[in-house]
Image (cartoon, rainbow over all chains, first blue to last red; front, side, top):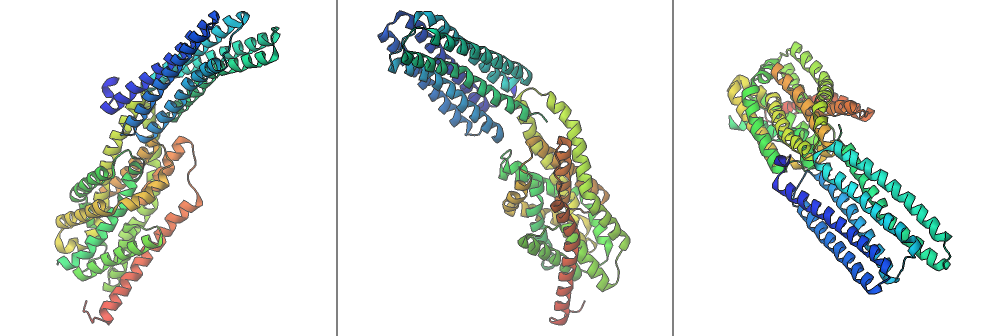
Length: 215
Length: 312
């Protein structure tokens, strides 16, 4: 299919793919951070939070480059608009990951050992949701049907992430820890779950792009 | 000689400025194609259409009434004035209806109008929007099947782009073939069909190249709500209609064809785009245009006869 693509379009698609990878990298760095929290090593956590931020900045840079290239005339204008909207909303996913890292770093958060597995599970599920979205976004250019299937997957994983989110919050409030700490942890859970919520938002957007092109 | 043809060049120029908007307006406004590219394609194909496909329409117009050069010139001048004044006032107008109004009055003055042809023309005008509607409805239904089978967004976009250019070229050909008769048809008895077709085609092309952007903005924005596919199909429906009438030698209005075509594409999509305002607009053009141009022709005739003591 790539035979059909013009040079400008190919460059934009390449940047779009790079942007998708950079967002994935940001979430992966966040998983590293969450996993290291097991050791209660604040300095290391700080270092890893910085890594998340760096990854997010990189995603931002690629986004800007892609947007610039797009407005040099790649694709027909209405798809250009759609794609721009998708890139902007994809970028919010990386921002969500960064805000989790900020939350941990700025408040020196620690995760109680009983909850550790849940937090790890939730973060990994968020990555899984994002990866399904990433596939949908890639397929959007090539194959409508396959993209639609990936969108359904994204929704499914997001639903699973919601379940984990609820269970974790329930568990937090069953622990014997100060209420302030409970609220802090609850907020952290919400922030992590935001990653899969934002992924689903983008998948909805892609679905509309596909619908719009059916005649 | 050239002096008598001047009003025709002016008329052609204004038709070119108006007519292309119905073919490339939406595509240019949607930035599918650049304004310059669109006008160059349109200009080339209008001249080709006028030269190779315009003869039949020219014969029709020249056979409504046999007029001399000065009457031919007055008819075209009045039509051009009608077009300009009505466009300025924002009243919908069509060149085919303007020229026929003028020819009828000159025919009445000189004593011979072929009413059979007039009846044929009027029936064709009424059928034009319906033709556009039918062709675009069926074109939509048929072409949507393969179009929906394409899975890649980019391939879809490429197809839209290529069809916009191809259908635009076809539409321009049809426009040239159909409407050139309005411009120089009345002169055909004097200067010959081929030369009439060439001069007419070139003057329409001149209008396209120099003054079509503003009209495109107006016309294009009226149909911009359509998606790319429907807009392309609408132009196809319009082009087929106008082309068939060119084959039959009946000059019709591209504006009426496109209005019908947009409605047809809308129906095929499942939306109802027709309203009283649109119908009123078309009907008023059918009535206003020939009457106005007939009146202006008569006024110019009286002026030339009474004030300048011209002998006809």
